[in-house]
Image (cartoon, rainbow, N blue to C red):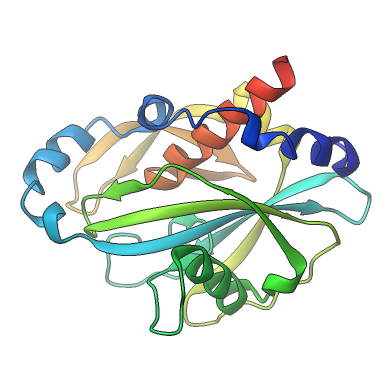
Amino acid sequence: MRFDAFEKVISKLNTVSLPGIKAQLKMAPPFREELIERYKEERKTAKPAAVFSLFYPSKTGETLLVLILRKSYQGVHSAQVGFPGGKPESEDKSMEATALRETWEEIGVSSEKITVLRALTPLYIPPSNFIVSPFLGIAREQLNFTLQASEVDAVLEVPVVDFLNDESEVVSEITAAVGNTYNVPAFMLNNHVVWGATAMMLIEIKTMINQILKK
């Protein structure tokens, strides 16, 4: 999809209601309900975090979505595909500010290049005990990325046409942090399996875009 056409669609984002958890659950792992129950007490003291979903034009004018491949480390989100984002710092005036700062730190895109369009539905992530606030926006120019070497292994520039194609929604076998293997709903984007919280946030975005396209 050409970026000029996509910008007209995404500019109507505030005309549709957030699909919320109803849409998110379409991409929820089968063990999420069990985890929610297991972390019922911990959730009362869940830590805040924010992520940013950013759309922008390619060199040829097509619309892209940026995702990142996280570094391998000793943690529950090791080597997973996600959005730029992280925990708030003392200088952040809001969760939106956190998402923008983390986008700058992790992939080198400054807030001056970004137009924030709206906040999405917050999502609880049991294994790491975070409540994540997602934000969505656009950059109206081609982007060059500078990766935070300690956090980001690679940037994935996902064509929006691939993201919106229903064939990108798959069921994939994954190994969870506890070592068990599950079949989970996921997106297959740029030959990477995108599942869990990121997939749940992506499906809300896709649902809203499709609602606008059908109007």
